[in-house]
Amino acid sequence: MGTLSPTFGTIIPSQSQQLLQSNYLQFNTGTGKDFAQQYLPEIYEQEVERYGNRTLSGFLRMVGAEMPMTSDQVIWSEQNRLHVAYDECTGDNADGIQIKAQAGVTNVISPGQTIVVMNKVTGVELKAVVLTSNPGTGALTVAPYTAQTLATLGNVADQLKIFVYGSEFNKGSQTTNWDGAAGAISGTTNISIDPTFTQFSNSPIIIRSQYTINGSDMSQIGWVEVATEDGTSGYLWYLKAESETRLRFEDYLEMSVVEGELATAAGAGSAANAGFKGTQGLFAAVADRGNVEVAFSGANLDDFDAILKNLDTQGAIEENMLFLNRATSLEIDGMLAGVSTGAQGGTAYGLFENSEEMALNLGFSGFRRGSYDFYKTDWKYLNDASTRGAISGISAIEGVLVPAGTSTVYDQILGTNIRRPFLHVRYRASQTEDRRMKSWLTGSAGGAFTSSLDAMEVNFLSERCLVVQAANNFVLFKGV
Image (cartoon, rainbow, N blue to C red; front, side, top):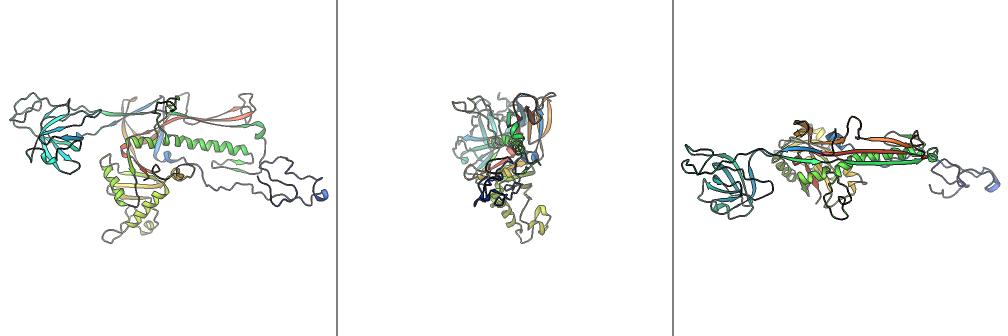
């Protein structure tokens, strides 16, 4: 603490209640060598909570669950799409279509099936029946229904989309052989489709922290009364440090699985080269397997409708939660307030059941657009100045859309389909060891009697990872 100015007597405030040459009353100093000119400072014993509740965790408790695991890796499988479609195909202006060769993509279109062929650039489309199909090369020959050739689609490369909508066969034809002419056998074999799944995995990381206080400082009484978010109180300053270390660690448990990255760069100087593996967090999983909306404006209804159209192409989960920073949340509030009057001049307050009093609060917590319900809340992690609240610009994360409810996945260990929240944490645990959140004392002070160290060491440890199922239903909002 600083020196009082102007100085009366010889008192200099100290954070701790201990005798120092500068802060206790001496009867043999001062003018007249008495207590007449000695003044005690007026001390506010409690700290001012100028940052309010400083903890950031709670997001995962709202949207997910925690479940134990016994392995170094968690593996889950997700369904692929049911219907057959190919993107970025090439046409040759005649009757040929080439499915683009991509890793993991196999031509499973059979002769006799009917397809829609669309030019994604011009919007022109044709419907055709497949005459021949080569599973190895991905080449198709087709016969259009309303044209002689595919010329109207243009001689284009990698801009056609095709999908199967049915089939047509002549009388007496066999589904295993087809040549397009009166059902004659051509030797072209029908292609059978075997369902496949896509497999994902993640690995837990070990998170640790420690606070150490020596025995002498533990017995020292402070001037200021300790008061922390978890209810710790008293005049022992080390209690505050120990409590804040615990609170900080609990925040790290959530922040680690939100911000986590897999160590993929193996060159010199990389984390992988140093022996670290990392873990895939929420932001990384959505960026890799989900949807990223760049330059999203909550004030623009068209931007929001574009997201809805994209959700229609994915799982179309009806109920979704929006976790946003303050600026984006206010933009959506303003947009909703602006459209609260219907197109014909009537009031339409949606989820507010036409309650004008609720709608005119202008702090909309829920609304419905199209066939989707959205529940909006501010995410403190994106607003706090000590984390992402101080970040703006191109890479700023402004929010995330999380589908509500659960999804069905195939559990490799149980051998059956199970339901899990879209977001959930897996932590290491067995019958003898639970690593969800461990804390223990070592040393010879503060109730610990484990070593000759004249100190108390408070240890914290957890081992966990985040599972993001069906990430194609998530949306990550990023700045411009």
